[in-house]
Length: 527
Image (cartoon, rainbow, N blue to C red):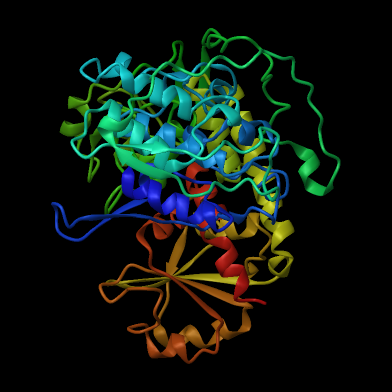
């Protein structure tokens, strides 16, 4: 916390708001021990304080919901104090291994909790912690930005003091910025001084509650931003409590290999593809088993996980059975796999309707039905549409431009087809995918290609190369087939594991990750 706080204050002192403070953006460097350093990473959506007072793109919230300040959720003006709130959320997560308001369930309910519910008490989850830490978290996560710490280092120092850290110091903070200050209004914090622990021991009483006021909602009428600010029209932020989930309606699923009925809400779900796990988690359900595919679990999926599910590397029936699911979701299953899974528990694959275009919207709606969370599914679909409209607005150069996706691995080359998650994502943000790469059967996402046929790729405006070969590193073209390099295509190389996983997934969290960390880089190649 101390090292991250120094980095954050450095950014704030230079007029930069990070906007995505969370544990996944803390990197460890150097040998374990006193020489180890903690680095603050991923300034991909950072914004200069004087550049935008609302810190949004096209009217949509840009932040990780589990750590988002109330003013960002509500679409109000925000400044560096939104980062202080997120740092308080992060402190709570690191102390308890649980995100604040994780028990809310759905993404919409979690957003509502950030706006209305009091800060959570770390000692309720981890009773061995000293009671003083609750007051630190409460002040950091105060609803009113003016009631929060005036700098990140002040927060870190009081946390160290509350936890009895041997090197704890107390920050003597400068006067707090004017409560009405907003981004660009001179509200960045000045440097605070530190004094030895014995010089002063602050009171750890929570800040006084801000007077409750009725909020009046105003929808801006500017461009695509009029669609919604954080899908405010889908759920009411003015309610006093999170409503209970509605009763589960018995329903029948006509799917690829069977017709299956469910008469109760699943209590233990196994999600057996990366996109299935993403969708289930994004809908607020913690699976008992996940198969994230090859490689480590991507950061954008970890951010949604508040429990420790069984991590599968294959669809091993014994491992799955040991997790005791009552419903298994595997929308990528073939008929043989379906039969083996159905012997364990009720299993849901894709719908059998040949007219269904299987993508983000269809998968979210389908799995939302299975889980009994149709409202949350509608919210996710709506927000995805808003966010992708925002991508098109800020990157008009991509709209109408042709793009193809090449997969390069140790086993060879393949072209992604129109039903692949990568093609569907790129189409969603405005690119045009070539008609000659249309899938010829349901579920077909790629086709092998020989190196001597790569010359035609130069006809497309942009070619995204997804690399998973051993030589992949740093976005370099080194190690790619010479015929691909010589094709004259405008290549965008993707080899970052999180980005590769997101392009190959297509789930809600993967799509959000691509919107905020990658697509602008790809679009810049066309300018």
